[in-house]
Structure formats: C-alpha cells, structure tokens
Amino acid sequence: MESLENIDHFFKGQPTVAEKEKFEQRILSDPAFAADVSFYIATMNAAKEQSDTIKKEDFRKLEKGSAQTGAAVVLMRFRLVAVAAAVVIAISLVVYFYMKPADTVQLADQYISQNLQVLPVKMSGQTDSIEKGIRLYNDAKTESSLKYFQDMLERAPGSETALKYAGIAALQSGQYDLALQYFTRLENISGLYANPGKFYKALTLLKRNLRGDNKLSRELLQEVVRQDLEGKETAEKWLKKI
Image (tube, rainbow, N blue to C red; front, top):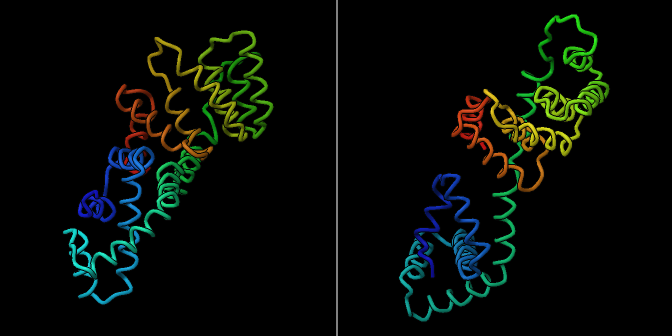
C-alpha cells in the first residue's frame, strides 16, 4: 500500500500545480493507487466517528500493517469500502483538478471589464479602417463590429490587427469557439514584436470554463511568461490563483 503519510501529506498540505497534475494522472493510470487514496479517505472518515485515542491507535496499526485480529478486521472492512469507492473518488478528483474553480471566470470577467470594455481609438479619419470597427465595438454594437472585422479578414486573412479585434469582438459576444479560432491564428503569426494571441486565448478559455479549459489556459499562461509575450504581468498574477 502507498504510504499513508505521503497521501496524508498531499491532502493536508499545499501541493503545487505540477504535484496536483502528477497525483491526478497517477489516479487515472494506477487503479491500485486510486484504491489506496480511497482507503485513506475512508479511513479518515471512519476515524471521525471514534474517540481521539482510538482514532490515533487504529491509524497507527493500519500504517504499520499490524497483523492483530482487530486491526485485520478493520483493514478488511476498509479495503472493501475502498474498492467500491475507488471509481467514485477517482472521478471526483478528476473533476476537482480539471474543472475550473468558479473564481477563474471572475478573473476573466474582471479583466474584460477593465481592459476590453472600451477599446482605444485613433483618430485617423479613414472611412474603411480598424478604427471604424472599434467604434462599433465601443458603441456596444458587438455583432456589427465582429462582422466588420470578419469582412476585413476576407480581404486580408493575415492581418494581425483584424484577427485580434475579431477575436475580442467574438469573446465579448460570447462566441468563445470562434474567438479561440481567431486568437489561435493570431498566435501562430511569427515575427510579431508583441503577440497577444496566447494571452487572449488563455483569457477566452478561462471565460468559457469548460472541462479541461483551466489546464489549457494555465499551459498557455506559462508560455506567455516563459516567452515574455504580451500579457506577461497579468499571466504571472493569474498563475498564482488558478
């Protein structure tokens, strides 16, 4: 059996992101380990019903693998419970590690409210320009703004500026899959001095909040920091929270 002290240390400590991922992956790939985790949880839950003295002694006997009759009976009982609960515990931990905590959506909403609610406009005086699309966006005509930038991309598919604002307009209108497509295209443009594609893609994943989005967003934010891309400062703050 996996050392109960190690499992106990994980649940009572403050594991890093890497440690959480390693722990979760082992549960998925190692049924025996999943059973050991279930056994630990079952043991701790049952121990709450006992007095402090009995609880400590039973835990010590189980940890030492005591062959005494009483401990053997308790061990057998807990083992049966553990086997039955292993799948449930594994699924619960997968949900815990892969489903985004509720406050990550709040992080995304806060950033959008503070930085993307109103976009800066340059007074260029051109009738067919990026600024026209931004004005539509700032006037809360998000769908019209998105259509405007999409038309621009029809004429210039590689325009990083049009991709950026099309993605932002799609994000603001709740079309997260479409926003991800635009930000992915932006992300893949090489040679840009400051490419915000990865950061905006991570932001969209935080906002979309589907299973697995938190993990993908964290990986992108780590790349933003490592590659010193646009959004690095915010990415560093978010990585401490998600």
